[in-house]
Length: 187
Image (cartoon, rainbow, N blue to C red; front, side, top):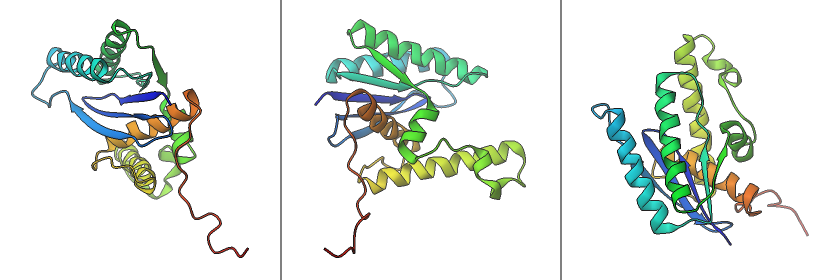
């Protein structure tokens, strides 16, 4: 089975590596905190991507496509560009996945703040943040149900969801289902 590597790119990157249909392993790449500027974060991304890609040489490399809009998202686009450049230098073809398709695949639906009416009384930005945390909790709960350790990091949880989606979409391998569907039925 092909070796699949996925990246959930942010200033804290969740990264997963594993054979399609096998057991994934996750880690985190920290690009620097608030004290680090964009040049330092881009350099950390370049060094981290070059090291991991050259060391593990995945057959499939997938990353979550960045969302557009703010200055912060400009940095995310640059970080994605660094990953793509490093992959292409090693003749690894990167493939992007939308957040919507990953979530629909992994937790059954692309949830948004509208799916959490219990947060409707909050200020819009707080409502979105609370919904975001609830969605990330759903992803991490699914990872735990599959027996995948994401070390308590929602970045690693998102990378695991992306890994599962990439394995199913690009390698035809599905994760092990969480049992229980027919438990208790008589023969």
